Length: 262
Image (tube, rainbow, N blue to C red; front, side, top):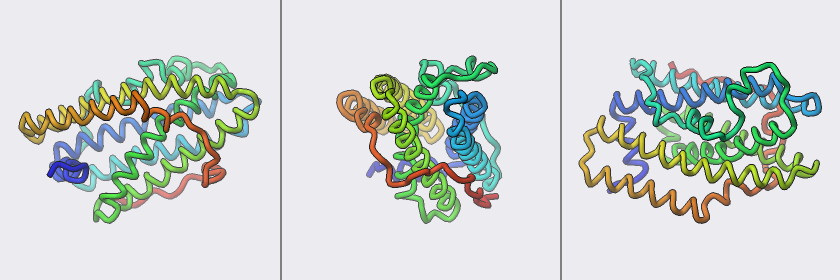
C-alpha cells in the first residue's frame, strides 16, 4: 500500500534520493537563516525588541541546515545540486512572498510594514514546516539515524510558529490587524501554489531516481493536485488564523544545542 511512511522510507533507503532530499532541505534552511539574520540587522528602532528573537529564528534555521548536512556526512554522502524547480525558498522570493533579497542586501532600515510582511510570510511557511516535521516525527521519531534530528527540528518549527502567532497578535493589537490579515491571505494563496509546484518537481526527480512506474507517479501527482484543490478552496484558512499560542515567548532564549549526528 502506498502511504506517506512507505514513500518516505523508500526515499530514505536509497542513497541518491536521500542525498537529494537532504540537500533540498539544507539549502532551504540555510537560506532562511541568511534571511532572518539580515532582517534582524535591519529591524526598525521601534521594533528593536524583536531583533534577538529574529536572530534566534535564523540561528535555528542555520542549525537545521547543518543537521541535514551532518546526516549526509554520516552516510558518507556529499550534498548534491538543488534543481531550481525544487527550491521552495527561492521560488517564494521570486513570487514576491516575504521581503525581497535585494532589499535585505541593502543597509536601509526596515519599516514596521516590512516586519508585518516578514512575520506573515513566516507564519504561513512555518505552518507548512511544522506540519511536515510533525509527520516525519510521527513515522521516524524512533529511527536510529533520523530520530533525534527529526524531534529537534520539529520542536524548533513549533517554536517558530508560536512566535509568529504571538508577534502578529501583538502587532494586530497595535493597529495593524487589517494589513496582517490581507498579507496573510496573499501569502497563503501564493504559498500553496508554489508548494504544489515544488512537490510535483520533487516527486518527479524522486521518481526518476527510484524508477517509479508510471501508475505510481501518476497517483502521487494526482494526490498533490488534490491537496492543492483542497487548500485552494478551504485549507489555506488554517494558515491565516491567529491565536494565542500555548508556547509563550518561544524564541526568548538562546538556540538549543545541535545534536551530534556525525
